Amino acid sequence: VSTQSTGSSGINAEYGDKMELEYGTDFSYWYNVDQDRLHPAVRAKFRKHKYDEETEEFVVNACNISYFKHVSDNFFSLFLVPFLGATSRNAILNRGVMFVGSSMLFEAMLEPCLHRDSLLDIGAGSGNVTEKLASGFTEVFVTETCPQMVNRLTARGYTVLGIENWVERSYSVISCLNVLDRCHRPLEMLQSMYNCLKEGGGMAIIALVLPYNGSVEVGQEWVAQEEPLPIRGISFEQQLSYFCNYILQPMGFQLSYVTKVPYLCTGDLHNKYYSLSDGLIAATVPPEDEVHNGGETVVDNRPEHTDSSVEE
Image (cartoon, rainbow, N blue to C red; front, side):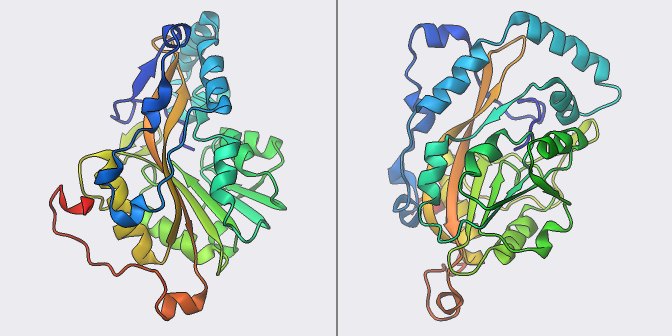
C-alpha cells in the first residue's frame, strides 16, 4: 500500500475531523455506487460493503492521535525533507498509516479461492494491510521498495522478495493494493501477476483509486507513469467498469468480487484522516482448458473513446 501523504501527488482527497464522529455522521456514502451505470458483467459481481467495526476502529484511532504527536511528526518530517522522500519519512515516524479493508471483507473476497498456500502482497508498506489478508496462509511474501518499510516488514516476520525476482515463484493469492497507480508499468505488473498465480483458482486482489491519477514517487519528487493504465471514462462507475471489463478480463482474469471502499489514511495537523475512493476487486485465474476452450474470458472489443460507452 502506497504511503505517500494524501494530496502530494495531486489527488484531491476527502478529509474528516473529530466533529464527524461526535455528531454520528453516516459514513455509508463511502460505499455508494450507482450500480445502473456499471457494465453488466461488473454489476453481476458487485457487492456493496458497509462501514464495519474495523473501519470505525481505524477512524476513531486516527481521530484520537494527539495534537502533540502531529506537531512532533511535522517538525521531524520537515527536518528530514532534504534527505528522504515522503514514504521513507512516514515509515520512520510511523505516520500516514493506511486502511483498505477489514479482515471480514477480505475473508469474503477470498472465499472462492481454492488454495491458501502462499500469499504475495505487492507494495506491502508497513504490513498493516498485509496482516488483515494473511490469516490462514502457510507462507506470506511481500515486496516493498522503501528500505525503512522493508525493515518493518522483516520485523513482522514476512519474507521480503526483491521487486525483480518475485516473478520467479507461483502463488495462491497475489494482492496489489493501491500500487498500479504508483508504478511505471501497471499493465506489465498485471500480466506478471496473472502469470505467477496458480492455475485453476489462483486469485488476485486489486485495489485501485478511482478516478485514476497515476504518478510515481522518485526520490523526493512525483513523476508521471511511463505507461499508465489506458482507463477511459470520467465517473467512478465508468472507470471501474472499464478497468474490470476491458483490462482485467482480456488478460484472462475472471471477476469474482467487486466493491467500493474508502482508502483511508491517518491525518496530520490539518485533518484527522483522509479518504480516497477505491475500487476493490477479486479476480481468479481459470483452468487452462477454460482459457483455451471457451471459458468466460472477454474478447478485447474495447469501445470507442466516449465517456458513456463504458456504461453499457
